[in-house]
Each structure stands twice: as C-alpha cells, then as structure tokens.
Length: 99
Ligand SMILES: [Zn+2]
Picture 1 (cartoon, rainbow, N blue to C red):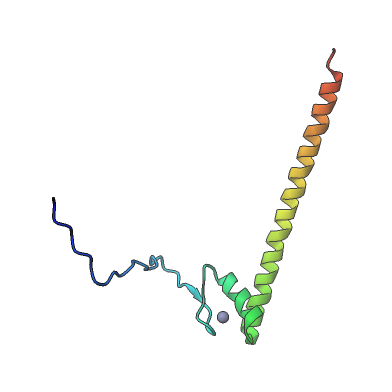
Picture 2: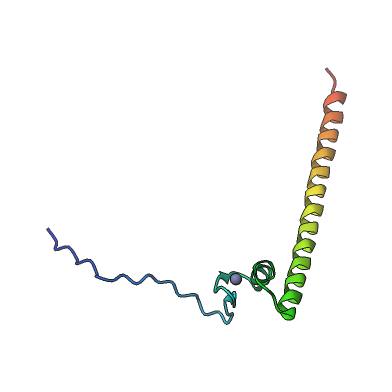
C-alpha cells in the first residue's frame, strides 16, 4: 500500500483573476463585482444613490441595453418570418405534387 499523502491543513483555492489589463468592475458602494462596466453602471443606478456621473453612465447603459434588445427583436421577427415563408412554400409544394 502506498502511503497516503497528508491532507493539507489549509487549502487556498486559486481564485485569482487573470491579469488581462482590465480592472474588474466593482460597485463602489457595496463592493459587489460585475463582469462588465455596463452591469456595474446598471446596478449602481438601480440600487444606490448615483452621482450625476454614475447617473449618466446608468442612462448610457440602459440605452445600450435597449438597443441590443431591439436588435434581438429584429432577429426574432426575421427568423419567425423566415419560418413562416418556408412553411408556406412547403405547403404550396406539397399541394401541387401529383397524387
Ligand atoms: Zn452596489
């Protein structure tokens, strides 16, 4: 039997963030961290008393989010229209087949 390696008394998890030159977005009021600055701006604007600069960042983030949502809706409408057109074409072809 090989001797079992002893369990280390303290296990330090490796939780370092890769240093890619970007600072993590951290809320200055409650210390919560976010993946993007936009998420942080939205959080500060909604949860805390935002300074005028933070308020502006919040509104910019809101606008960017609604732009993205609008583009997503366009894509969904386009995809649904494409599906509908495909089903109409398939129906026309099916009914015009002999037999
Ligand atoms: Zn916060």
